[in-house]
Length: 210
Image 1 (cartoon, rainbow, N blue to C red):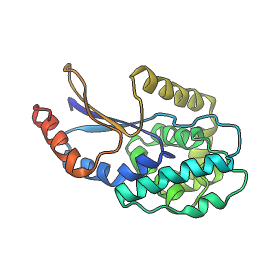
Image 2 (tube, helix red, strand yellow; image 1 turned 180 degrees about the vertical axis):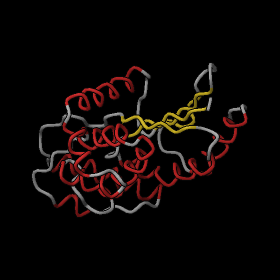
Image 3 (spheres, helix red, strand yellow; image 1 turned 30 degrees about the vertical axis):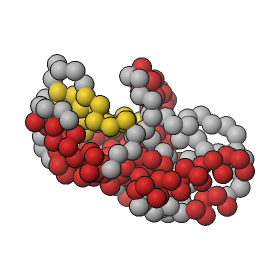
Image 4 (tube, rainbow, N blue to C red; image 1 turned 90 degrees about the horizontal axis):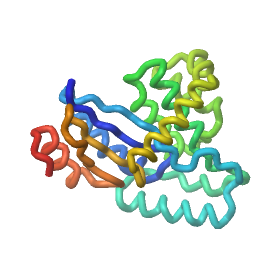
């Protein structure tokens, strides 16, 4: 398969959650014409301080905009939490761990993480929660826990953050089409509704980028 979609994303990025239904349509339209590879970008990795009231106000504003633009469901009781540290590294590492065990389930894990964090109010910084979610998408809990905790998985996750930076990715979601030796095509850099995304996908698949 010569065509590949590179999907740069973070499971705790609100615009990525807003884009999730669009990406599902992309998957359906692409079918077996191209492979989709998920790369975790690291929106807020290794954050150590708990969210302040100012942080919560900033994030709530983003969530409101995403909800309005995408129609996605958000659980705003999230902002009632005390001492929550918004570290996206564990959720990103969970995707890397799942991909190492069963590559085809990486995007399913991404979708499950999105819904768990934004719509169900689950703490996707908690390794126990991440293991539960991995088990739900078909990865045995014990296998996940071993790979998730492994130092090599941590280094591979960090490597993906660095790869996104080297690739010039400025925000998430970013979708890039790669076709053999031709120049990669940015199909979207940031949230894009399906009406705008569809012609870009069709053009790339046909060799005539929109």
